[in-house]
Amino acid sequence: MKRIITVLMLMVTSFAWSGDAERGKSISGTCVACHGVDGNSNVNPVWPKLAGQHAQYMERQLKLFQSGDRQNANMSAMVVGLTEEDMADLSAFYAEQKTSIGAAVPELVELGKTVYRAGLKDRKIPACIACHGPTGQGNPLTGYPVLAGQHAAYTAQRLQAYKNGEVVVEAEGTTGQIMAQVAQYLTEEEIQAVSSYLQGLTKAQ
Ligand code: HEC
Ligand code: HEC
Image (tube, rainbow, N blue to C red; front, side):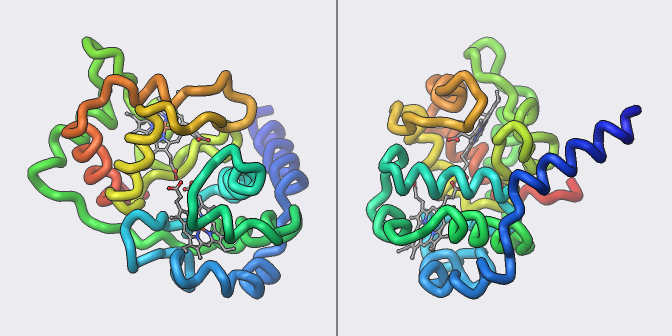
């Protein structure tokens, strides 16, 4: 029974997100300057890595940039002419790339790991692991993005934006504002620590 359900779930996902990665690659030329040839951006650490991110999550973010619900000066200009097909294909291409993993700052690992794996119960900060998984791979079906290997500077900036209430629309199917609630009590030090921990997190850990 379990196997049948898994197969059905895989079928549903591949029908819903059947972006053409080959075509995505062929139209990704305008993205290279900031996100790198294979989605591993390496020029500015607040330009996120896209390699290995879930296609559904990226496709949705591209739509949010296009509708103006997610605002960023760099990205808003990039999505103006994209069709739905373009967004699906670009997302399929980046999802297939391999994430390059960075390193954590050793002094920050302990605090970062505690926040990520256990949360800070007395401060109402939930464990990130509950949704983003033990190795930071998230979950494509529930809209939880991959965090492992991402540039710490981008992750920290994103957590700060959630904390400041600047991210208004969240993953489809969620009750909304999940990350705003998660991030509201995090201190700057905890944000830096968990972001650094994630930069060094690998699938194999
Ligand atoms: C001029 C630099 C630049 C270019 C070119 C660019 N991006 Fe981005 N991209 C960014 C920045 C900066 C962010 C982070 C925005 C933020 O902080 O909200 C981003 C975020 C994203 C995200 C969301 C990632 C996440 O984890 O939430 C996706 C998906 C994305 N870009 C796809 C693309 C695609 C596809 C192209 C080409 C059509 C492209 N970008 C071109 C700078 C750029
Ligand atoms: C209850 C589930 C849940 C928990 C717990 C949770 N997250 Fe999230 N997280 C999400 C969802 C859903 C999104 C996507 C939100 C959106 O679409 O903007 C997200 C997005 C993010 C992003 C943005 C990634 C990107 O590429 O832009 C970061 C960073 C993040 N979470 C970090 C954390 C950290 C650190 C913790 C623990 C302190 C945590 N999350 C706990 C559900 C969760």
